[in-house]
Image (cartoon, rainbow, N blue to C red; front, side):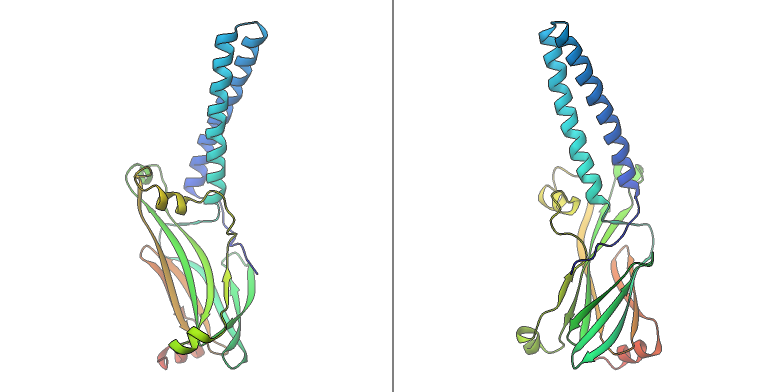
Length: 230
């Protein structure tokens, strides 16, 4: 079961949309002018403009795909609530995790183990990117169950759920990691994770800060679970 975390357009997405719109209009104008030149038998000039329109249009398509990929990330301007998670025990080391996002979207997943873990990707910018208004971005990647015993962790059943589509063809995280010299405005990209014990009735809040994920107990059951955690 995969659940896409809902997001709203961020600063980087709006910037890319503006550039995409300008490039798209430029490609259309170049194509129209080139075709008009070819119609009037101006082969050299017309062909050149058509080729330029294809290049500019390709750039617009790439920016459009990147903008769609950035839509799966959230802006991080300060500490931000990412998700709340509550637990219902079904059996020994078997729980239902009820996740609720700030906009009200919810999902219920079955986790195996003694503890739950949440993983996220974080992208931070620098230099001109910050001047352009591009805030740090984060995306909650997955939720999983884990066993406190190493032996049990090796041999026990695994329960891991992705929280976004993995088949994205263009991902800013992958591009920044693959071509660090070509994207110099990326200050840092890193994974962050947090995990706490699973107990029937426990409820936690996960927040994202500039340094990564943090989880806090929201009720007495969760506070007792954290206090007695070994």
